[in-house]
Each structure stands twice: as C-alpha cells, then as structure tokens.
Image (tube, rainbow, N blue to C red; front, side):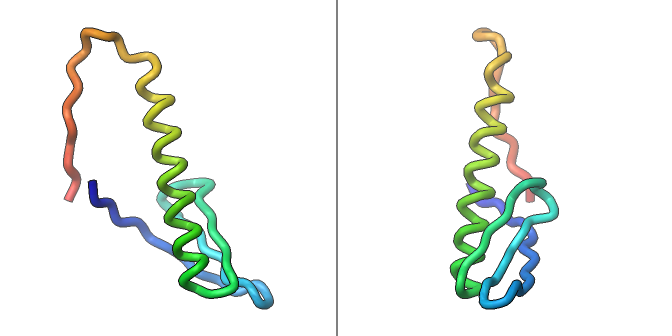
Length: 71
C-alpha cells in the first residue's frame, strides 16, 4: 500500500525535527534531514499499524472486510 503524508521539518540546534500534521503524535528526529524523515516514516508506520489493530479488535468474525484505496 502506498500512502503519502506531509512532513514538516524544523531545526533544534544540531538536530532536524520532523512531524506529520495528518497523524497526531507522529514525530521524528535526526542529525540529518534524511535521518529525521526516515525516523518520521517509521513513527507513522507504527502508529497506523497500532491504530489498525485497535480498530479491528471489535470487528465481528463474520463481518466483511475490503481494502479501500485513496488516491
């Protein structure tokens, strides 16, 4: 699955700090902008995985599931 999100970068001394406004709590940091971007991508993936698992816990076993693609 391919998703695109906004990454906002700021500097804090020697560190690059990144966050994603669409995913509250998704933050990253690194000594380089690339490190901060990679760290943010990992944070986004973990948050989405956790939210998916949480959301599916209450789904009844006989409920239909389909994948929806957003472009």
